Length: 96
Image (tube, rainbow, N blue to C red):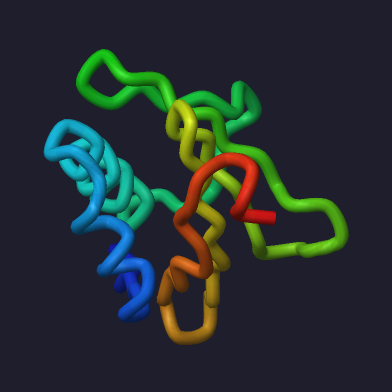
């Protein structure tokens, strides 16, 4: 069961401004999330020798944040429509 992923225009713009290597990492992460959007107990996923830390956002049942080095990605899972909404992708200090 695969989830659809939705990115808004601002996130697409920010993503295109990132270095190519970071764009590839984000792409691999999004592919992984579409298959399994919920973090495991370990909270780390390893994709192509890159570790991503995923944590649930406090005060939200279906919102998560992923640590991508100096960047953060915030997403929400909508089970009903089988969709992952990428809410924010920005520098670590600016995302919250």
